[in-house]
Image 1 (cartoon, each protein chain N blue to C red):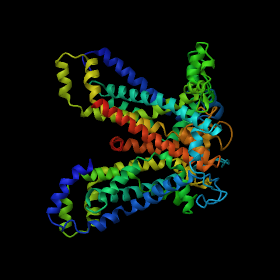
Image 2 (cartoon, rainbow over the protein chains, first blue to last red):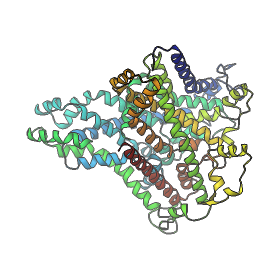
Image 3 (tube, each protein chain N blue to C red):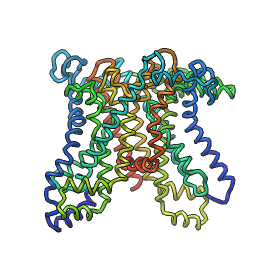
Image 4 (cartoon, rainbow over the protein chains, first blue to last red):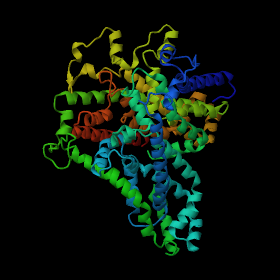
Length: 283
Length: 353
């Protein structure tokens, strides 16, 4: 507030530093613990320098030990597969629908947009049993189809794209249309290239959402072969896999789930920040 | 909002001739077809299926839609049992409601105040390293709830980092995740009050004393976890709002001799009201949906004191195989969230008016 008072300035900085430590230190401990042995993790939980450095947890993750009770590489494969498919689907289908809702004049458009808003307000936890019922009903329960198909379009993404297209002037598109381009050609060659910022936001949100997805996979699959890093880590943490506390292994696996999102976050930080605010508009 | 901005444009475009708009109807439905199919088949349709299942007592065998011994219709019983029939089900459900009530009571105000406070500090012009602090506070928000909960299970373990830290000051920390003692019970205990006669009244299947427990020690960890993971997003929302505030109002207040505190209290905070409303609403909606954290920490342990309605709905279905009951609970959560949002809107509308 008052920029002439050094005392205020110091107090503010101290407050921020304390909070920054609270927010970041758990991650530091997590990294350090992944390089400790089980007894060491329990004996010195606070130390951030593992001594000696113990690679056992990471060896287990990369399949370098005979113990294959925790097939983390297979989980990572599933996570990557599902994330790529869901993200690609969302980016394409959400922008198609968002474009139509923003630009194309057709009967029923208003109703569709109202329906999108209504769908967005359905709380996710109310959908657990419905998703289980419907995948059973269609005979795709416990398959990759059940994991991917229900997620490849999301109402929030359609909403973000619609809001974005609303802000883009229509003149360029109309020029392309008058030159004889079809609606889809216009959309593909003219509109999408202009929509880059919104597409990046949508890609990040979709990637983060499907990589971190938990409950959907929990209720639509059953076999261990379909476990992702997140569902696998959940059963590991819940204590249904392996024995003992296995903290280093758990911390390393949790770290592995965090790394892709963290990289994405640091590379596209500005877009993610904007996305968080755009997502907020829906409330 | 959308209709007011598009209406005038539609008239202009219609007047400019039909050529450019030709084929819009077909393209419109084709472009939205994938969305309609996916959201229709995997969202709207299954909700209707679930609504039907909530009127049956399907046990998970066979099809839920063919009646018979596996899924007899029971009318509204799955709903009324939760409120009117004395028994274990009502007791468990009411415990989950009580747990969540305390969870919301602590999380929503604390996360809003923490986020607002940190945003106000970070927003100061003279501060150095703004970008770093913003990143640091936001980082927990991008990671998965499962990974974060795993880390917290270690940090708050019996021999974990938090107790080791407390030990540095000679404090013997509790066994966080396995401590079912209620915070308010502990406070009562400090005054020598333990399950007194006046607290024996039965309220919806639980004694008044049980209702007054406060969040358990284990729940406090989940409360802290929620605040820790959500404030980052809310800080960004407040920062965006703060940057949009007109500077001249604040300058005028400064010219009138307002102190920093007065400016904050009478100028900045009132202008932030829409953001505060948004953050509390998002907080309320989020806090009634806690599921992942409860799943990882063992499904409501210790003693059911971290059980939430969202987890109970799952557990009742997939662990107890009473799908009708579980689905009914899911619809009640749905109604609670809708009602809360509506109430808060009303409340704020009245204060504005």
